[in-house]
Length: 405
Image (tube, rainbow, N blue to C red; front, side, top):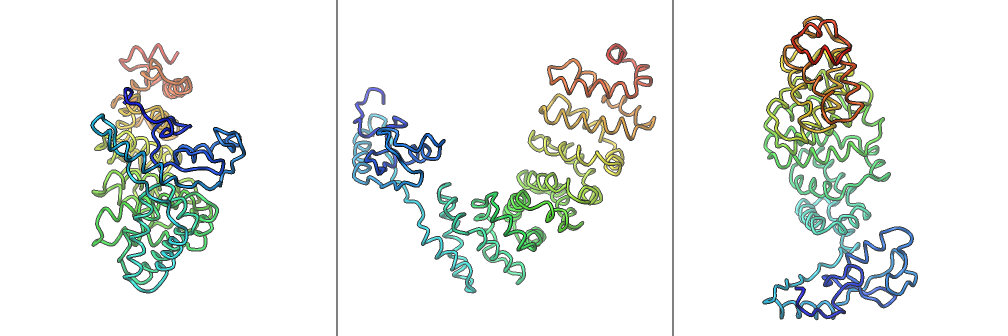
């Protein structure tokens, strides 16, 4: 392409690339839509025309330059043999009036009308992020949440998968959505209802979990602490135990991590059997992201006596924590050391202390001191070794005797 003489007016003044969607600003200069939109979304100093330096409002109208686009497309086709790709015809941004009409159709009692409107909304949301933002601003989330709640109360499933995809694409962390959840506290229960419907496929349930995770991230601490019961946490643990997809398991782990700090949720999660299932999941897991999430949650659960008790009931608990040290990520190193320290400091019977030695946890903590890792991790490792130095110093690990002095 470097040897081809590209007409100068085909190039965006910002990106210096061939324009795919040329638009003209009120200052009379034509830019590629993506480039000028990024410019206007930048810092306050970007509210001027890049070429003329005249004032240019962030919400300034951008008029499509159809003639120039057709000229660029024709030129690309003519030069296809030289390796020039054809510029596709850009799709126009979704019109707010169309979105509002579809929202009204979703709210009606006609099932076929509901489904058609949902499908169209999902299609628009899947096109690009700009459509997703416009749809969010128009109130799509509220309409779709109310639709799902209607299905929940009537026991109907038609349109649920499409509705979940729409929320997944258009949900955002806003004050409006937080208020929406407080006004519709049954929405979380509707997600649990979807997870328990056996005839719905794993894809639908994965969508439901991802939506639930997004919703929990926005929900207030009061809502998270007061509305989640034992059934909720049992269902999340069942996701970890079952044959769910990795994406579903990551969503369930994210939900448990988000809800754990509030109220009595930590105890409820432990009572649901989460500690045992987390260790079982890690024993068969090979994905770094899932390991990070597992140890993030284990660290929280092992901060209380009940969690440590459940951790020690699993014969592979200490071993799996030691094995993951220095093998996954700094985040996992931090949390695995926290788990080991919690056990060594608060739950260290002689049997536990000897178990830590037998499964290699002590030698692995010694390795942390010699590894290229953060100083605070080495400090934590040294503190762990000093906790039971009298017992461990009699071990055959000569390095240990040297390090704990």
